[in-house]
Length: 114
Length: 113
Image 1 (cartoon, rainbow over the protein chains, first blue to last red):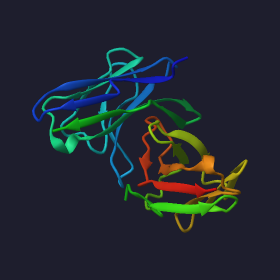
Image 2: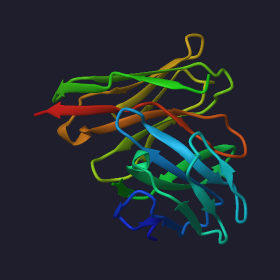
Image 3: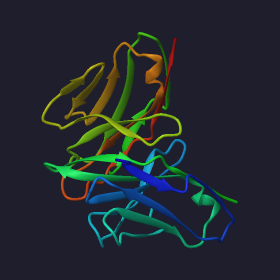
Image 4: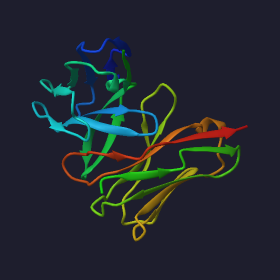
């Protein structure tokens, strides 16, 4: 099992460009999440999904869109990148065990917006 | 009210010493408190977790202490080893049907040989 994989690992964008980050999981998890990690701020939830075809906003959703067309994939889009979106992005997936969710994280995507 | 505050931001401990990281929360609806460990260049991974119906949980050298009345919980790493050098995040959530976690700011631990 590959677990949670993220594509690409690194990316440099210019302000105003768009891109899509791909997250894939092979654990048949229902729940998937996108976080951003910035120094001194921990991980902040951008968007999440509780199942195929569903998405919902997290703490910091502005400037991002997501789609969950297939259960195993969760895409994060930046329509018009801004320098404030320079960050490390992590995808995670989980399943519910008696209402508790252990989240499994991917290796991250380091994005720089110039 | 959704915040989880973590301290210290960084910690240096000698090999064999005890590392202690503290977290505090406001939302009394939180009922699941995991700790995640992250090595450089990697994603976080679950280390240990606790529910508020117990005051302490131990797994090997790692112990969570939980104080419900004070709304605080802490991670103790006994006999700290250089291999424990990593960033540690506390988190909290309301058990239910979303699994959303609120993370603390993180603590970078360095264990000196």
